[in-house]
Image (tube, rainbow, N blue to C red; front, top):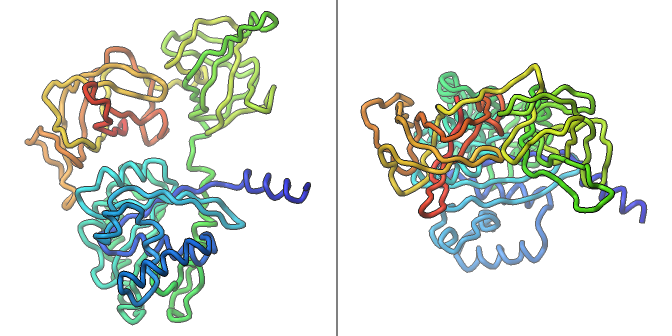
Length: 427
């Protein structure tokens, strides 16, 4: 029993890597994920038998591993990915959450959704076609979302006879693109998702490649610095006031640490009021009087002083304050088929705060194919990306998205439908 418990505890404490896959249509994203799951023995026998039968029924020569991820009927029938498919697997080194995102232009919003929480982005490039418009589009979105690690998988190397010169040309062409974007860490892996070359097992057919396999790279990417552990940010989600008599003077503030490391005794400021206090205790479910709390832990903080704090307020370091204001400028991706209306009013959600806002201006849009700014056209339609400025009815407590992804992102919600219509990254 203790051996089982040790294994279970080890699994729970394993580091989690979230990554997204992107690429043009038919670049093999779903096949790659299927290969990762199959070769790492992360699928059950009955699942394998089911896709073997489905492959035979479709008259295919090989087992179609893409069927492991293309779950919607429309996806299976058309052979394309439409929705974001999340898959989970683990190796002895790490746990993984995969977001398989669509390659079609009309599903750009789905890629933004799937990539918003990713530590890494795998962008597939068909070795026969090289860098295409969708490669640039998805790289730009990865840059926009500040995904720290980008892995370029040059797929279908089996169809170009595993030639080194094909790999090197694509690598050179992509570097010319990434130089224009804020992509910090770019890696290249030549693969064949269909044959399994350099996905989980090293390929003997590309002896000229001296890098790692894709799985080895995913297992060893350094992601501990992907979160902000420097700037203390604690958006208050709920005020804890137990009804028991013995707890009559207890007042705790529950939420998820968005940045920095909090410790008892820390001098803090509560915004927007600007009042100061000290951290008294830090508790979480199953652990009281913790020595510290850090992202993304959900904890309850108590303070030395009795201060009026409510949901949407933020506890921060006394000497490291975020911005506070009502005029917010952010880069956006429009997620709705409903166009932006001039001077429209929407609900803005940011950390634990919800306020009304009005669109002040559309500063520019981006031509994804050329990366040029469009300043004349103020209309905003589905999947378009650009920069806008809004005015909120109450002050917002925020950082730039580059500094802190949690306190630097917003979403806009249509009050009539309650649909999320826009995702924003504060600049």
